[in-house]
Image (cartoon, rainbow, N blue to C red; front, side, top):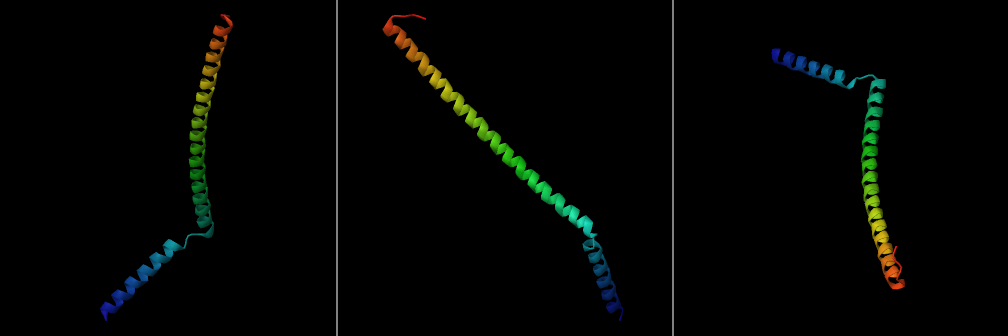
Length: 89
């Protein structure tokens, strides 16, 4: 008989502790959900911003390299043209 009481008492304690854990007020649950959505969106935004920055940096590097090559080509062309025409700048 005592064993049944012990089992019943344990079951009651487990049931009470389970309801305590799950019975958070609705507004708190909603706040936590909004917070987790905000956090995940914020993290996604941060990752996207970093990707954009890296892409922009690569783009600038490529663009600077292209500008450098173009300027180099122009100055070589000018040097050749001045040699041909006999003019020295």
